[in-house]
Amino acid sequence: MSEFSETYLDHFSSPRNIGEIENADAVAEAEHEGGGCFDRIRVSIRIADGRVEEMLFKARACSGTIAAASAGTEWAKGKTVEEVAEVTADIIADYLDGVPEKKLHSVELVAEVLQKVARKN
Amino acid sequence: MSGTQKHIAYLDNGDSTQMLPEVLEAMMPYLSHSYGNPASLHQLGLDAENAVDDARDSLAESLGAKSNEIYFTASATESNNLALSGLLANYPDKRHVVVSPIEHASVRNLVKQWQKNGIAEVTFLDVDDNGMVDPQHLKKSLRDDTLFVSIIHGNNEIGTLQDIKTLGEICRERDVFFHSDMAQSLGKVPFNLSELPIDLASFNSHKAHGPKGVGALYVRRKVKVRRIMEGGPQEQNLRPGTENVPAIIGFAKAAEIAVRDREVAMAQVESLTQKLSEKLLSIPHTRLNGPGHGPNRLPGSINITFSYIEGEAVLMRLNLQGVYVSSGSACSSRALVPSHVLTAIGLVHEEAHGSIRYTLSRLNTEADVEHAYQVTLKTVESLRAMTAFIPEEHSERESDHAKTFYKKKSE
Image 1 (cartoon, one colour):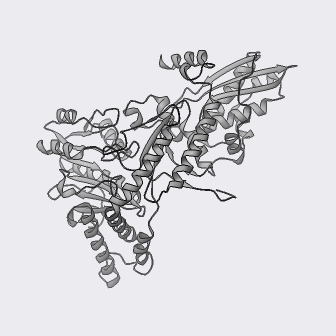
Image 2 (tube, each protein chain N blue to C red):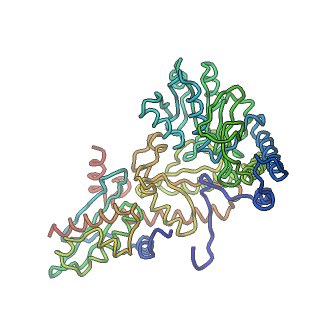
Image 3 (spheres, chains in turn green, blue):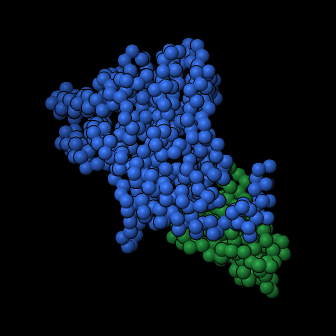
């Protein structure tokens, strides 16, 4: 398991922020389009004073997308909507202390859905 | 794995097995003081040559072959390549070959490359939803210029056991060579090569509690295969390169034990396999991929789709809790491509993605089965609780969204 960081394994094993917000300010979905991977994710967001108060996710996904979604939603908490709208895959990968190349599609997918949900506001 | 002691259930014996102590013991002299090259003319060399000859005799007996029909290689992959490329090189007038769509990559990728480069025409046979080749389709596929048919005996992913006797007889009627990749068969199912209509067969050692780095190719007498590598005259001039003496000795010993103990060992393996399979299939929304447990399936082979979750995530969670398995999920492969075997038997991508393979050996126990089941149950429940994408009939709350999502995917 050495190819995965401790942080990655922690977020994968004990993912944070699972669920769906009732009466969310916005909901967005994304799925992996390239290759044969069919990871799908949905996030919901609640905003207060221009900042993310809560962000939850649900996913049918591989370990990378589960870890990235857990990390991405944790990272987003307290950020401004504008910051989340500009999140990149690198930011999420760094938050996980790195991801192996084969899991880059996961951090890209989570960055995409976070941008989407933030830009709906 | 760090820290506290935990139960490890190794259930990936289709990938490799633990070497038996008797095998290691047989190899030890050739890993230490008996280090001669079998080609050398001094005593150490002669000792090594004799040991390899004895191992060849022993393996031939285990397989039901003659000693001069056995060629040692480095793996079943090499044996497959040598068999098929060696036939192609020897029969330039025959440029049509027939394979099943569920072959190992070493056969599948080779013939696809021939097809792509215009070297040979390839027919991929139909299989049913259990992976069984249709003998009638085979019969219809054979042509005057068909060189060979290659069909895997026991499929490594879904355990399908082909009726190689019937398939081989069809080939024999048309004077077409019949090759079978039997890498998974040794010690699991009874066979005697001299009684089967098989011209070439590939084997390896490490799936049967022997060492890695050694395989064998069986070539029936009078079948002409050309060498595909240049070098010395080893292996009756078919496979150059200094023999891997310790591995060859270990392989022969492992095969001897596998055949000797097969009946008792496989009865135990099959009992544990069916127990685990029943437990896993009691988890809702699961299906067994491949034939039901019995005569058409390799002992020890379970392949299950857990609907609505991703196999790679299951595998990773199981790994963290000491259950070692494999998956046909695309996310388990670097190329993000799902298993060609699972798609060949008709699984849609979502089903292939949720597949997990458990393969048992004689070294597994009741405790392994219970541990694997408990960990799998918890993992599947946890991952399903995370997903929003379950169709209507399985989750009323999520129904509208799921309907839209699945409709979109099927368009």
